[in-house]
Length: 398
Image (cartoon, rainbow, N blue to C red; front, side, top):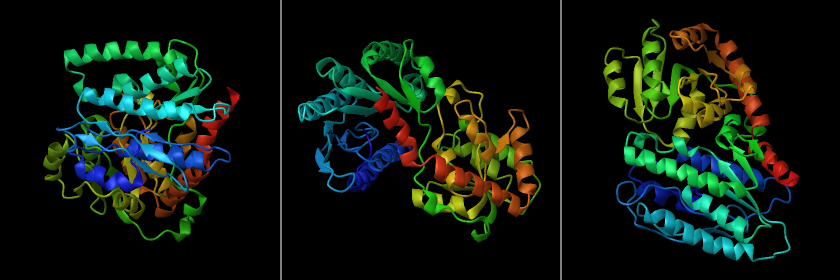
């Protein structure tokens, strides 16, 4: 895995020059906590941090090896590596391989499963190596992203495009031995041109039933619409601001948390409308609280781009788990069961504007009923244990 050990998380944040992979970290911890909550699911984590490379994205060249515990008496290991572009992947592979070899030789009579997170070079190579050397070990790959859509900002570089094509061919050759997969969306299976065993885990909620509050017990909320995430035009944030500005109602404000390449464009728009507030980046705990304190949350990402088939925005589960109603598009990669738990935007030119206006005009009671219904769905159907039970059931069938 590539999660952030709790005792090392502050160090990662302090040394990161660009944004860290918070969504990936949350998802991996969700898997760990879910497996931990399933009886007889005993495991050890061999971890290799998903961080930026030195010197442009991270200030440390050498990443240390150290032990940590995901819970109780667990003996997990974070594998150190040289954090330099190109050399980094090889260094990670060598370190992980050493630990996996050691684990594979322990208690050979036991049924063993090696689960890797993300279709990246070190982990694809490790899975291929293990299936060749230890064919009795079951190998499972969790696929949060397809390689075509990783580092999308570099896809204008011809050299990068050609290198990516070679990498994909290499991955397809080496992944044929892998026993099973965990996908974020059903459409991800289209990437594989051979029969595979898989299950879909689109996201994991950190909340459980004890977090569920009654609609009539919710505190007074401020009349505000909130978005938290990357301030990028491709995610519909500019469209959101423009749609809100068309609504003539001074009682409401629009709050945007995050940063990104469209921040200056939003600043210019906000000069024309004082109801639009750029809140910048904030600690995750603060953002989660802010989501509870407003009347409406919005995910403005529409379904016009090809990558939406292969992605599930983590903020959907986060938003729904807050108890505050959400406005959003029904994305291709989103399971149909979600549709009745949020205010769905039509894929038309004025769809977002119309849904914003209609939702703002609803009574407070109506909005809170939707928020409560969505929260109940998340804390009963999308908890860590419920979602990870799908993985365990798939492994048991092999």
